[in-house]
Length: 150
Image 1 (cartoon, rainbow, N blue to C red):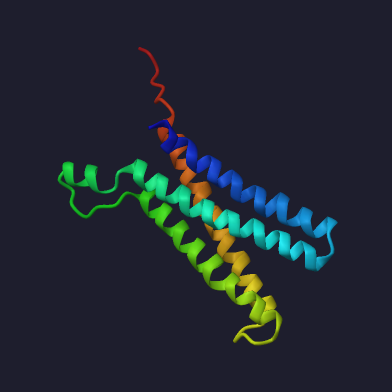
Image 2 (tube, rainbow, N blue to C red):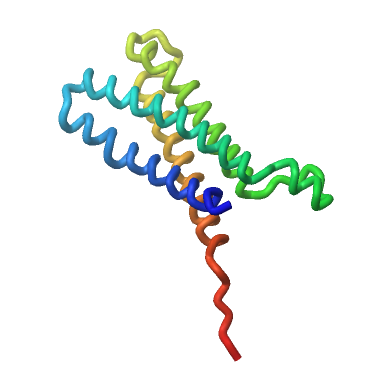
């Protein structure tokens, strides 16, 4: 069960690396068109990895079995909600907004490229924040409680 506590930290670290290292480095070293293609590929890999990590976390968290066994039918933990919200951000950001960016660049979308790009950045930022909160909660849950000895 330690993987359940390790994966959120790795996930949050991956998202921070994409946002703070990979994407800026690509635009700093490559021509804009090439950097855009590289970053698009990075975000594609990140989206699928995020979906896989989320599925694994939900599986490791055993959503249905413990809730039914404990008699609390229908209750979903905050950690599980955080995972589901990150999945929603991934689907909305990558499969929704980023899929519209090529059409917006050609002037064929209902929003401008800049507006869609800002929306994608905000959704990615929210997803990163959710993953950081999940990692923080899992790290706190894995720490033993130190009680003063009397």
